[in-house]
Image 1 (spheres, rainbow, N blue to C red):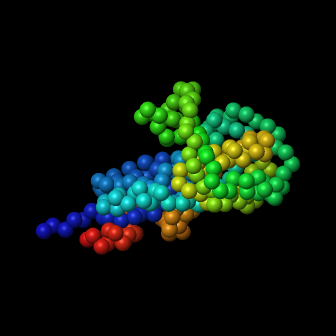
Image 2: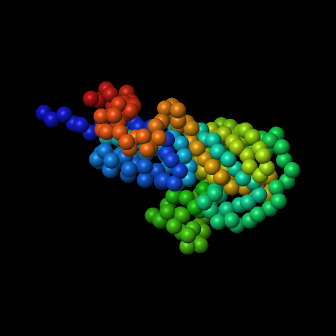
Image 3: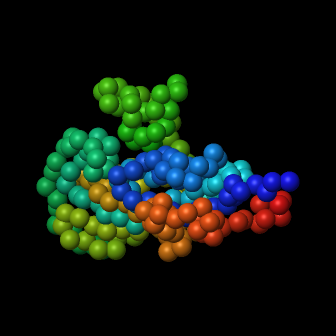
Length: 238
């Protein structure tokens, strides 16, 4: 019997900016000629950090891994709103930033803690009648988006030098950090957009254990296999 050489397991990737999550999946699939590769939780193109890939039999775990809580770090710029709520969008409004301290911003950020209904931005991959919303947004079409229940465990402003603040947030799956940045700007009264975003934790996995995509693509199949995490359900099924 010929042993199956297709690797099975979880690969932790430190996603670079400028690539979609699907781009990362496609790069790994093509480099190592692996048919079954998926990811567990989309990152926007300019976001960086922890992207969990599942290879081979581990693709069966994608839904479970995707549903885990997340931690993000990043920066928000006050005084400007964009149509996508992040740095990639077109400016739709600008306002003078009021005199604020980090403590002022943290008091506002604290109000986001707990359960809330969040309306996804129009510029998102959510589909309406099979069409991604961002494609409709490009045509100037705006549709009603059902609000989703999310939970914010904490939202902390770490530093503030006008007009930009850095933050860390822990939240449930499906949370749009872009929308939180937009909502923070609304509460401050001057508007805001998400400038940078980096995912540092997803469930039990941490960015410190991830490898840069460039390093992964420089490996051979044997080296890649050594990097994989084999979860217990897969190990016991072999």
